[in-house]
Length: 524
Image (cartoon, rainbow, N blue to C red; front, side, top):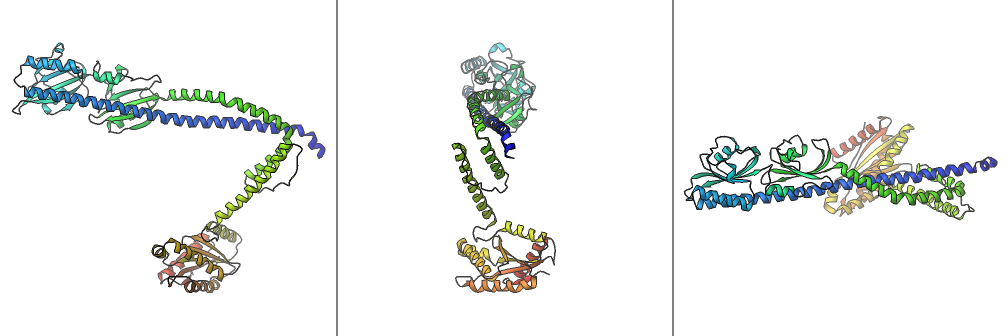
């Protein structure tokens, strides 16, 4: 046997070298995969957050701009109302001055109450004198209140959004409206604000939709005026929602999207970044990580192979021992032995210390998992295992369920500290009465369970009564006696089912409580 082992030394070293190599490779893969997943989540959250911040700022800018536009129309209406003796030509000049100075609107018009376009700036549009009888402009005129329309084709044939302000004379009579038109396909202040940084270098871009889902602004002008209601994000904006979401756009491109509602006008701003850009960033990150990680790991692998060829035998032994521990099987602590190699000798002694510590910790954890920390007696888990073992052996036994009467009242009146002390005294009383072969457990709260092996329910009744009387006589709180109620069932005379056995004991316990508490009842 010794000769066989000697002949296979090289094979064992080679095998151990292979295991070390695989371990190092797997460690590198785990680090790479973990880093990839972590970076992916971080980048996704970062871009969603950045997109939400940008869409929020844009929505605020648009909201502020439209507030200024509304104030401009209100000021113009107030001026014309104050100067209601102005001629059409004077009003025309006023509109042209406002239109050229503010650049809020592509055109400004005064349409009187009959629908006649009395003045329009710039005059080259050529609608002066025409009468509006149908369409969105007519609806806004007849509404006689401030409005902001959905996109529509105006009298000039352009796709426009109309902001209007009713006009009254000094007597309060309706004189029509002042309308500011924003041409969605042409330059204006709105397009300048939105077009500034609409597309980033990483492919991120934003677009604006109206309350009905129509695109009002888009880096690709051919998209303006299209219906985007099938886009889930646009649908949420139409419902007044703001947030972030990963979506696939109408072109089938996965996007990280953020969306915000412009509150006063109901428009929505959608900012989105292609997922492909995030993947490109991740790929570059993984390349950089590989460049940083692989050299030290290759060096580590080389060193491990060199050491493994000289320390194969003791390391394999220790690896087997650690595998035994990792599998949860009990491991015998190896006897102290010295190795010719200093590192192997040190590692062996370290493993021995670790094995002892692990076994002690496991024992402590096992005890803690099976022991009630307050009373120091076994808990429900230990109870279940004992009962299952006895039931498998067909060992007859009786079960007693104990419940402290009015325990909640004790806690509420005297405090939980007194309640805890009461439970400890109850355990001490049970311990002083039961036999050495009897087992008692804390089932939970103020409930306790006692198992009496090879004892009938009738025989247990007298012991239970001794416990009940001892508790009543010995445990007092400010001269008030603490009492308990008990229920008894018997295995397998009553049932071979453990759940039913508990049910019978519980029923007997409830009967004790129903009959006035401080009594013992046998289940039949």
